[in-house]
Amino acid sequence: MITIPALLSPQTLGVDISKGWFDVFLHPACAKERFDNTTAGFRKLIRWLREASVELAVMEATGGLEMPLFVALQAAGYPVARINPRWIRDFAKATGRSAKTDQQDACLIALYGATMRPAPDKVSDHKAQAFKALCARRRQILHLKCQEMNRQQQTQDRVIARMIRQTIAFLDKQLDAIEAVIDTMIQRDANWRRRREIIESIPGLAAATARTLIAELPELGTISNKQIAALVGVAPINRDSGKQKGYRAIGGGRSGIRRILYMAAMGAATRNNKRLVAIYKRLIASGKKPKVAIVAIMRKIVVILNTMIRNDQTWSADRAEPA
Image (cartoon, rainbow, N blue to C red; front, side, top):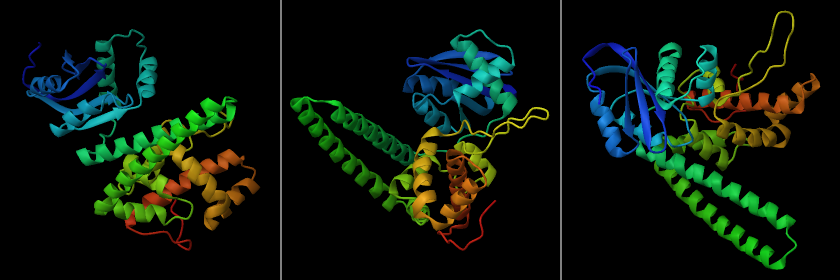
């Protein structure tokens, strides 16, 4: 193992994670190492970093594989940023790096962190992680139920149809149980309880939306409206070149939040929320396509919620709209 000398200059740690191990690279020290992706490996990494002045650790968000190491680094006091893997790929293309090995990926991630300076993720605790995992499991069960309901419509076999009905009934029980646990966790936490109260005060936003936003968007109320829109991925991105004006589009951000917001915006903008219905109709009247108008409503909901939670206010249809 490479021993790191006392490094006085700030270092950026790049981490490339695989199922069995993870590679790390320190920039600009050019120190690299590989560790087992286990609790023992995490401890060895922390010891390895002891003499280094690490100001930021950067890793890709890989759908949960990175979370144990992410939590371990945060617990050791290191600021950690989880990055969309696409951003790393785009950075590699922009800098002309085509070679690909785990150690080269760790180096690239470290260089990305040192160059782009991404904001570190909010420090998480075990309760917040457990809550987020429960919400993720709820989505998985809903997906399984949707698949079974589709199969139920397609099958002509009576035996298979009965088995599918039994599976759906089991999944419904699982949903009831997991939602009860989630709601109990919210009720026992004063901050989460107040957030749910604020979120559900908006006509058209129900319990499912509140659960998802509490679990996956803890930044609500702590950053600017522009930042929260970009974080979710509902900020319009310009695509202009010279005299040509391209269509605005959204991208990046947290897709799970966008999915739940899309369904909430559909209901709020078309029937449940008079204020948002008026905005939606105005957008349609001005020539916006329905889907574009719904995305605008999604952004409006996120911005309104960000302002309401920052100011600790519940919904008021008469209150001035935030920018």
